[in-house]
Length: 427
Ligand SMILES: C[C@H](O)[C@H](O)[C@@H](O)C(=O)CO
Ligand SMILES: [Mn+2]
Image (cartoon, rainbow, N blue to C red; front, side, top):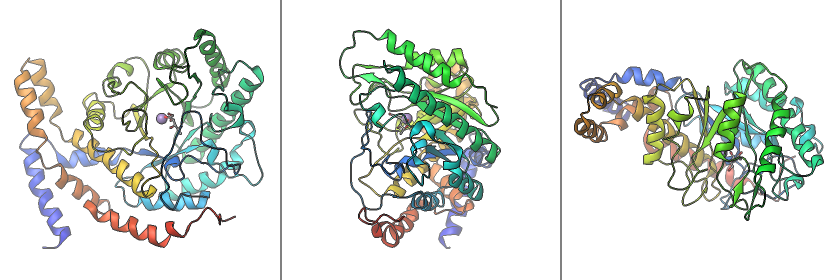
């Protein structure tokens, strides 16, 4: 029997095994097929962007490593992304930062416009990859002292307000072109390295700036605003203006989507536990699925307990239609296409594992107070043949099952990535 036949046979056995505990694997596969994960463009070039002025990465973001093949142009980034999408089952999205526009001449952030994103919009339509968007409030001379929308200088604040307004218009144009809302996520780095004397006024300034940005009404069928909180960053260890409490309150009062990044809390604090609480008060949630190692280090997502818990919470709570799943990591020490592929495949594997749980049975046991059986069945679940269902999903999705995807990435590295050098950037 060939490999493909073996995958079919293993799936049939797995289907029986799951059916015996009341789980319909075909239904789980239908449901996962409807989930689009938003891949983050910034893994492909180490959060550099295409503004052409070689600003160093700042405002608490840091990428380490020098693996060959960083994308240097929008075309290279698109080619790399297409290589990754071809290795990931399902249809997914692209999360684009404003600094990744296509600029013939220098255009400052407050003056960017939809014309600078036409190449991306066309590519998204051609590829069937809907876009999400983010204003870029970092790596810019007007953010050099760590403050943007909460800056004490009204001129600097206005510059960033104009950037935020421009980005909402671009996101709405993307949503109109693709026929589905473009999630526009606001992460604002502002914060203090050392103990502030005044935490209140910067927060009032941030809220006022955001109010101005969000005052223009845009069709929710075109764009949905999200706001991303953070506990600390490099250089903002003592106080981040846009903290969790700040944005939870802001999103509830302004009806924005809240964004929870898995790396943005104390290392012992998990976002899986926050999902069901937050969704009682905000209509929708954006997740930045990331992996902090001791701090917000943005490691590639692996199949951790927390990743599994995040997906379990989404499925167990019936939240699949209210949670947007985005990725957020950047590792330049390994092949960047592999980083996307590993992280996205892991997110999907964890989601599939959650969809293959006997959720109703576990919740019934809990209602009855039978915590012994609940624990027993949760632990038995870990030995169920998830891998056989995953391989089948990859096979019917026409992407490599198992480790074969790595051969494709290695070949791409030889044929494409190793030929790139920073000394000869294509025009
Ligand atoms: C580049 C992204 O906007 C950034 O990672 C942001 O989402 C974040 O998480 C900052 O720590
Ligand atoms: Mn994030």
